[in-house]
Length: 380
Image 1 (tube, rainbow, N blue to C red):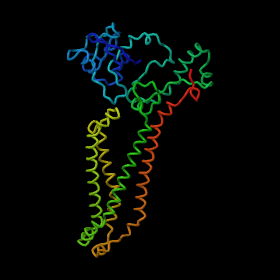
Image 2 (tube, rainbow, N blue to C red):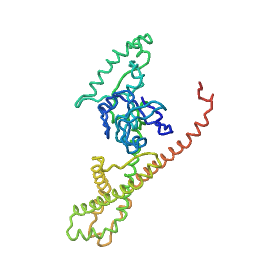
Image 3 (cartoon, rainbow, N blue to C red):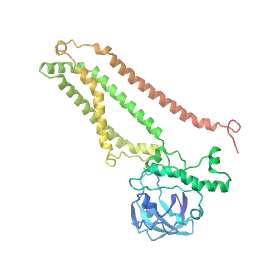
Image 4 (cartoon, rainbow, N blue to C red):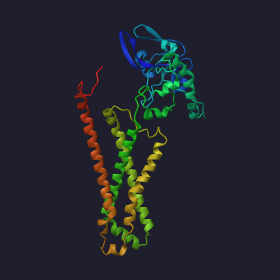
């Protein structure tokens, strides 16, 4: 159960919306760092609350908050039993006030197994198999929901299912809720994993365009390095040495580009968060897997972008190059033409997709505003 309440501060009644009811096992299931108070007894008694550090400073300043009362809904005193650290923006849910569920009359009186008034979280023992537990849930439905249906609507559970209705319980991993849950009753705003796939594909396409562009520019400027390759081959350099040199140059450019990209992202991220209303962060040091992944990406992009130019430039024949007879056959090479077509094809696809989405987003409010009763909209 979650909602809002008013808290008295002097002569003011301040509305607090980040409020939820929770039972005494809250701290057994979730990791909520406690700054003051005992988490094991914090929500056991009625009319007790746990507040965040922000709320504690808001109503009590620098004075200790545990043991003091907050006047809620104009006249009801609630005892503060614990203060927790402010929850991060990227949490599954984010509340500032937790009210003892033992205070709720609805929690005391509700015994119906088909009630959707509460969000239930379970913590499995280490090594437990969630699928085995989920396999037992249909038996719970038949044991507890079946008799309830018979007493309320006078129908059996089998007939209930045959008529096209459905009732059941399922487990969802906590880390999968944000992107994979389609329930509207989640405690936090859900995302959509399809958007992650779409934007990841767009980022991949843009990265491929950059790689292809690097290949084309490197090979187009091949005449500038032709004599270098010819002289080095005459002096005894093997083709493998030249390939290694060009690959190292590509990897170095990839590394410098990544550092510049990270710098720009760090500098512009506050502007983006302010524009989009988000609280995103790079988290380079808070996510152990991110730095190795970036290094792998640098190597992959460097090899992908530098492999073809390296093998192309190292294939020059020294005699022809030193005589000034650099072959121009690459200008009509099918591979280079294919790369150019691929580059422009992806660019056109992204531009058209952006234009279509922009027009859909722009036309949508007008379509809704133009919907009139009797023209496909039902009013009751």
